[in-house]
Image 1 (tube, helix red, strand yellow):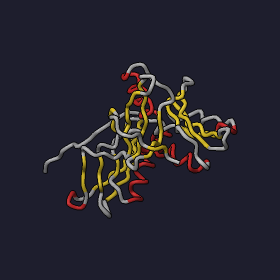
Image 2 (tube, rainbow, N blue to C red):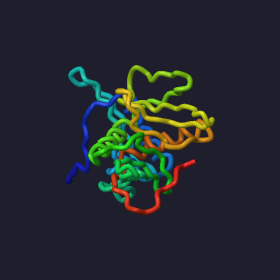
Image 3 (cartoon, rainbow, N blue to C red):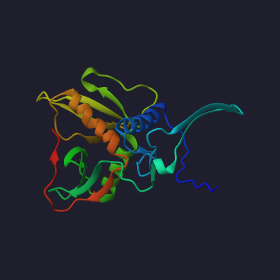
Image 4 (cartoon, rainbow, N blue to C red):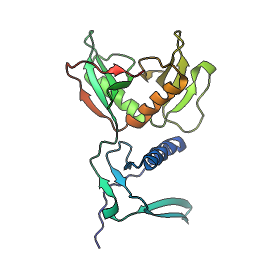
Length: 224
């Protein structure tokens, strides 16, 4: 019997980041979609309708191992190592001031997030994208109008802030712990629920979204 390791990753995660990871898997299971294995979603498994599940908790030299093993006949499922689990693309472009900017465009053509500033160098804009990819999935969400503070534990190095603007629209911004806004919605929503849906789309799609330089085609539209 031959054994092949298709993917393996190891490291520490905060409780919030772990919850985000399992929620992505749970949503995919509920929708009958392939399950994202890595954070970028480039490795996926489709376990079929009724996989075998083995749950085990054991102690070893002072360390507790909590293991969930899902097994299925490969003929009943599938493994993909070059998947495009994200439904978004980061587009790099230059504005009228010749500064580099980015926008996160959903497959449906809507802009679901963008950078809050322009950059002189392309590499700085890419660094901004990478910061969003790292921090968006596990970021806590707070209501800035109520002066809510994120929990002291868990989360990432950034926080999603929901707020109402002067036009009675709801918006979100992703603020790094250093105080910088690294992403925002770019437009207002009619309800807080719609704004939450928008930021959740960024949480889901930012990690695995490809980065492409936009051409001269007509720009996508903001999502209302």
